[in-house]
Amino acid sequence: NMNECMAELFGKTTGCSKGKGGSMHFFAPDKNFWGGHGIVAGQTPLGLGLGYGLKYNGQKGSALCFMGDGAVNQGAFHESLNIAGLFNIPVVYIIENNGYSMGTSQKRSSAYKDCLAQRADGYDIDWDLVNGEDFYELRAKVNIAMERAHEQSRPTVLEIQTYRYYGHSVADANHKKYRSPEEIEDYKKNHDPINLWKQRLISEGILTEESAKEIDRSAKQETDAAVVFADESPAPTIEDVTDDVYWESDNNTEASKIGRHFFND
Amino acid sequence: MREIEYRDALNEAFDEELARDENVVIMGEEVAQYNGAYKVTKGLWEKWGDKRVVDTPISEAGFIGMGIGASMLGIRPVMELMFWSFHSVAFDQLVNNAACVRYMSGGLINVPIVMRGPANGGTNVGATHCHTPEGLFAAFPGLKVCSPATPSDAKGLMKAAIRDNDPVYVMENTLLYGNKGHVPDPSEGDHVVPLGKADIKREGSDISLIAHGRSVLHCLEAAETLQSEHGINAEVLDLRSIRPLDQDAIIESVKKTNRAVLVDESKPFCGVSAQITTLIQEHAFDYLDAPIKRVCTIDAPAIYSKHIEDEQLPNARRIIEKVLTIA
Image (tube, rainbow over all chains, first blue to last red):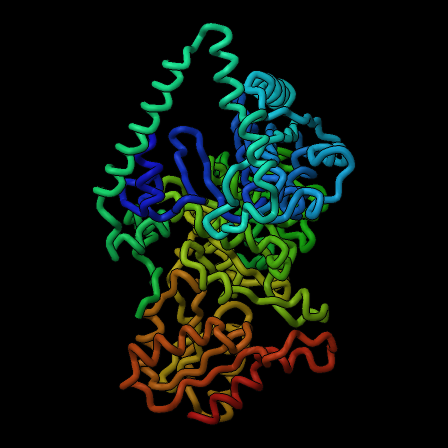
């Protein structure tokens, strides 16, 4: 829920990672969410491994491994694609392409022919380009990829064309300098998937302007409540620093009692 | 007394653990159909098949990361690096993912994986293939590191590493693979050597030689000469495990002998011996009758030339010379 996410951002013990992960490292394995990994493309071999594990255990499933357009030039991603194709791993790599890897546009960072996902051709992996403005297209194409993983144990690369209104991070204060205000406004006005979906649902009579506003309002209320929850939650103590390093130590096993594990003095 | 080679002792450990736990998978370059670059995994693919013994492409970042991801789901991969020297191309996976996922998930996920392979110099292959990164990886909390010197310890530590629920990096040695030694017969029971327990390989009273891996054998050779030619009775303490570390055994030995020479194939700067030095000065300062001395690999990238290679590494002669400066 939002509380454990907000508390994690605040660095509180009630956070999903007890305040030990931070914004880049959310985890919730009970919800099949396996992280939250801060190194660009460093997660792509892990996604491969989750797919490998599912297959090893004989489970029908797939790993959905997300990355930005800035990740496609990392070696780890290409190694993952090669192994995914070679070993028939049920993994779906999803490139959320917002056009910028921090302050560098796609054209200035990647060599490509028609699109980034097309690189999957080199590894004999199916791929598709998805219009991120359209929820229904996105859902349908992700479904095709997951079916491919489930039924044929084959990987897929999907590239979703999307956008971001703000900087890459708090360190990216220049985000209005490497692109024009008109570009940002144009996306908001004409391409924003939430607005477009809202308009569609209203035109189909499923939503009204008023009920859409209500959804918005209740989300903001939930956020405000999460901020209060996070703010009032306790911070980790100095004793917490050395918990969650070793499984054996946390579980006070026989192995954890042999030899010294920490070296503070 | 049954004597088998170090490589066969490891092979026996894999075979027994493959039989004990269906989640154990052997994985790496040439480990299956080729029987292992150093024949450590010989016969395992034939016996256990494609699912349990898996050849990977030359793609360390990819397959090491894949093993870590699979271990998050409870698979227990035993990953071979053909040389530990190749750690550098998979470094992000080895130190960010293997070491930190448990911590960053607030303990929700663990990584029960073993990374293994040879880490040693002395084989005339030049600097890129001679790295000894046990101190490097022991510097990352979340990882465990061990370095067996004998066939018996190789088997026992490997079995402990596979059963451990944290990532354990086992540093073997190509120059030890062919060494024979006593390893208890499987019929005598489960042979497991716990991580974090050092072993006195030779009892002595005059000086402590503290080492791990192949350096232990150099210490034993030096100790014999020190006894016969100089009347110095050296104790040889084999650390076996770097992290967790048997600090008690180190301090106890130094308190008994009052002198220590640390022998370490890693480089002197922030190597394993540097950490041991600070522990001794902090916990046994008043027992020391002489400065702590070290014999490490001479501080340069590994030289190729066979003519001089063994002199760059710790050896019995260098150990004896160092001991004679303080004993």
